[in-house]
Image 1: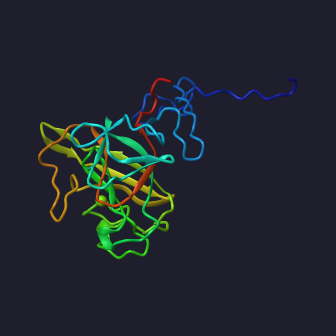
Image 2: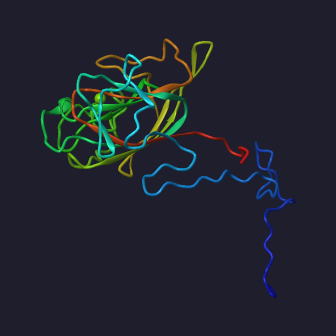
Image 3: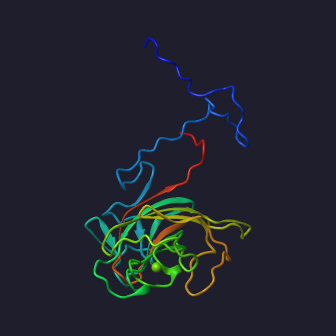
Length: 248
Ligand code: MG
């Protein structure tokens, strides 16, 4: 079109970025992969959907069999005494989205009220609890890296309301069974940051100190806890981390 200004798509005469093979605004630098964002809390196009509201074929109970949890109305709900459930898919570094609701009818107190848990790699628990006006020990509150770090703030919604976790998890690294770097967790609950790149002391324990010894593998399942309370989960999806300049 007459008079239209041509804008170059990158440059080839700019300085090389320190530690990178690319120039500033490099015209040859690969384009990021295209990912279609989800609709609202929907899964992005490159996510692994772990639970879509009805299909539990990607989950197993402790014995490796079908899960005993209740599935209805787009969510699954803990069926007490049927045990924890784990995804068949295993992950290391990942972005996790998961929504939960604790029972609307308040029963019990402290750790006995709306308790469940989200275990990254089956080992590192981000606590699920009814933490709305429910006194308990701080490192056991909703969003705690359980038994290690309380959430920075209490961002719980009221009992019965759906709440959303977005978690960035960096798996620990071992070399020859020696820890090289710990697990790191960034946790956002209902749009509010609870932890930023927090180093865990090791896999989650109860009433004890955690340790990275013995070493564990580089990947593990997502595990959800049966703590005996009727906690519901929905919209569970996971994305593994890519790297800069991955091929489209
Ligand atoms: Mg728990």
